[in-house]
Length: 256
Image (cartoon, rainbow, N blue to C red; front, side):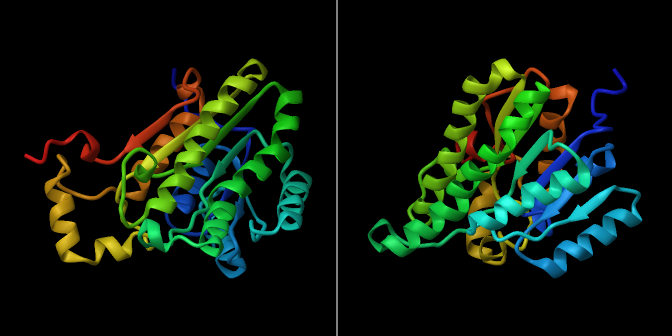
């Protein structure tokens, strides 16, 4: 029982890992024994994160990657497995949110959102699944969003792309479950990150949101990271095809 969260010997690739929830997830995965491949499009922060992790005793490699470019994804997987070994855990934490009404959606914003939030995840997953099949061992986690399960008049396009990730998790869980590959999504509510500052720094929006959240606060990155650790480890070994909501109870609240 004491080894349920032990990831010793595993190699984990985490995209969007140089800040926010991605960084917290990479850290907790590394602290529990995995070798982590840190990736984002910010080379300077990737290297700084690698150094910080290594100072904590985490075996880490930084490989910057612009996920909008397939050739960089190819290089990420090749270099990652060359440096660290076969990837057993893939955690996709990349995302952009372009606000606006449904009537504001144009082809440029649509294509950019879908490419960064969904298409890159599909392509990257296609690159790592074959080796997971050979090993008969794999975990894939997508960082979706609360927007994937509820309507939103200002972030509708973002929500559509994140709902695609949740459905991708279900599809892959069914197709590759016989290969002992588990696939899940995590859908956080408002978490205290740089990404969420347009919300968290708006007192009017936050007052309303807090009143709609039974725990009466926003979430912390470590609370999302903890769920990722569960899903990546033996402790979550019978969980697959799920979209797990971490929102302090916002979606179940009646507003009282």
